[in-house]
Image (cartoon, rainbow, N blue to C red; front, side):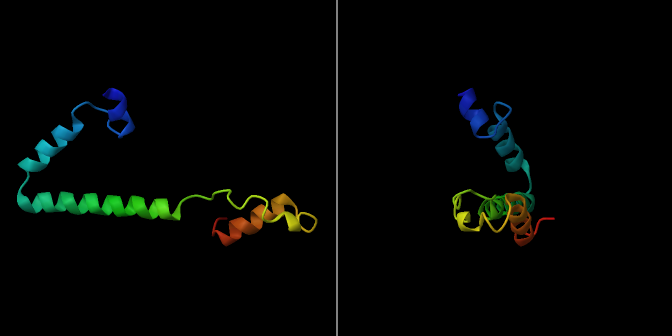
Length: 85
């Protein structure tokens, strides 16, 4: 049970029940604010996951350029295109 709680991101036993209890004690308008915050955090997380990080599924796709560019030059070009300094 503890391993499942840690995997789900819970660090303290009973945090879900404590959180639910606290939310139930709030006024209805404050509960709506909590719900809005949860929706915001979920959408923020989804955007992060969609944006994601670079994968290497394209590995080898630039092999034909190996005589024309060094790997460092290609890294710099990719960084520019990804908008990173």
